[in-house]
Length: 254
Image 1 (tube, helix red, strand yellow):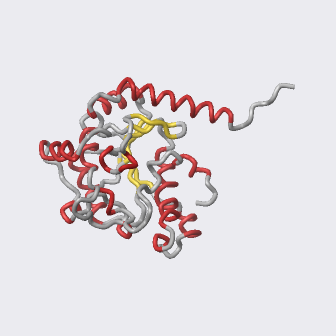
Image 2 (cartoon, rainbow, N blue to C red; image 1 turned 90 degrees about the vertical axis):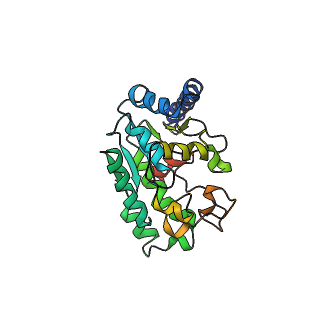
Image 3 (cartoon, rainbow, N blue to C red; image 1 turned 180 degrees about the horizontal axis):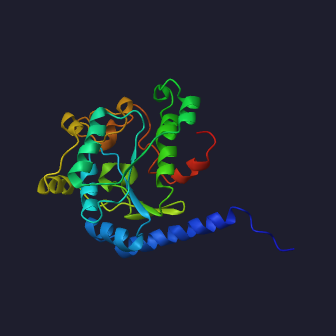
C-alpha cells in the first residue's frame, strides 16, 4: 500500500527548495556591490515582496541610505520591544525624515504573551533568552511573514557567529539578504562620512551595538562591537537572525 504524504513533507520540500534558491542567488549575486544587490533584489528578484528590517542602531544608516536610493517606499520593519533607549526611537524618526522613508512598519510584542510571561517587565533579569523570545523573536517573525525576502545590515566582522555570513541565505520559506556582509568597519565609516549620514547619538558614548537598554552597555577597548550586548551572559544573538525565526510563529511557549 502506498504511503500517504505526511502533512509536513510539503513544507520540508518547499524549504529545501528555498535553501537551494538562496545558494544559487548567492553564487550569482553574492559578489555584487551592496548597492547592486539591493537594486537587483528590489526591482527584479523580489519585486513587491521584499522589506528591510532595521533596529535604527549603530550601523543602520548605511543600509537605509542605500535602500532610499532605490525605493523610499520599501517597507522598513522596526521592532519596538518596549525596552529601547529613547535615543533609538528619536534616531528612527530622524533617519526616516533624512532619507524620505515613507513606510516604517512598527511591530510590537504580543500583549497577551507579555502579560503571561513578563507582566512586571523584568523577565530580562532572570531569563534573557525568554525575554528575547517574547519581545523580539516572535514579533519579528510576524513582521517579516508577509514578505518573500528581507534585507538586514549584518556584517561578517561584527562577531564570530557572523564570520561566514552569505549575502543570500534561507530562513524557512523565505530568503534573508545581507548586502553589507563583506563590509568592514572602515567601509562603514567611509560611507558615513562620504554621505554625511547622521549617527545614532549613543555611538559617541561607546555603544557600538545597540539593543534594549537593560541588556546593552558601552563596548570596552579592543572588544568586538557586539561585546556590549548581554554582557556576562553566554549569549551573542537575540534570535531574530537565527535560522529558527519562523518557528516562533507557532511556538505555544511564547
